[in-house]
Image 1 (spheres, helix red, strand yellow):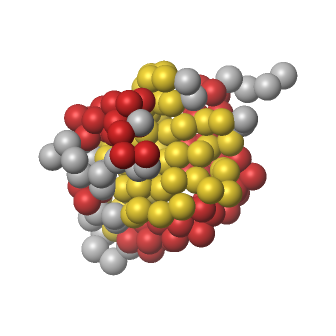
Image 2 (image 1 turned 90 degrees about the vertical axis):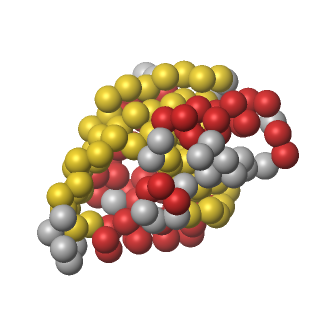
Image 3 (image 1 turned 180 degrees about the vertical axis):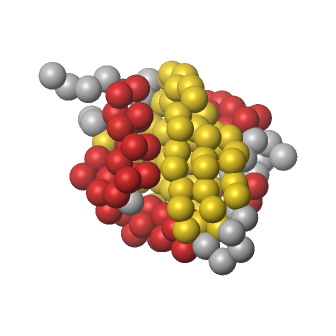
Length: 147
């Protein structure tokens, strides 16, 4: 039986937390759009597996330990989801403890993730969803446009 989109999303967070981005690549479209706003420390704006791996590598270098807890998944359009997930992490060099809610915009097409946006602010995630649904600009929304 094919997993539901919600099961795929929860499974992806679990798999990434346990085994890293490389383990997710079979479920990631080769042209995935990766965007992380300034508000999430490690800004990203790119496409493809290399962009996803680079973003994850930067995150993993900054945080010695991290885990993710999906708090909610809301379907916002055909294949488009807003996911609120709590990140628990410890800084690699500083030992700083992070316990923060982040807001993801994920798109699933044909069983693969085609869009990964990460925001530190729910309004910015909602604005990204609105822009995606309206098709403004023919491409990726500005990750900091809702600030």
